[in-house]
Image (cartoon, rainbow, N blue to C red; front, side):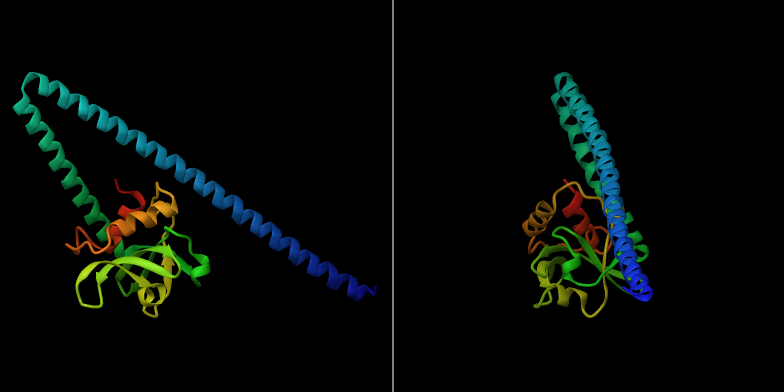
Length: 210
């Protein structure tokens, strides 16, 4: 082997090693992100569980004192939950134009349950990838009815680049399959609302909602 061949071989080996190191770093970085996300989800779940337990005990105590008052308190909590959900959905809608995501080159980069979106100026449109190059989203269908339905990845993108929400920007507490099943359970639902019940609200509900 000549000196030139030796250094060319060494260069190739160095590039191979560099690629292996990069892949390992990406793998461990993803594990770290997943671990942090799981810890965040667990803490939020515990907080919500404690809140629900306190609420149930409060209602039980009030019911023992006065059933009618207990019913009123329970109704008040339900109204509070609805209002809280509406407010959270509104905040999601406000954040829409500022969403950041990683560009998706092809369906090979996607996993079932991914929260994906496209951007058109300050407008973003969101959906849930359910596999087999299909997306479930909240938008007008072929008949012009605004409802939750399935489209191809190509039709969803409409020629625009597809971006994927990170787990920190779009938290997830279910498996990818469960997210897809939740999306499918809402097929043909309507009652679209630009501020409180839009495509992003739907996608986030699939990944995190009760």
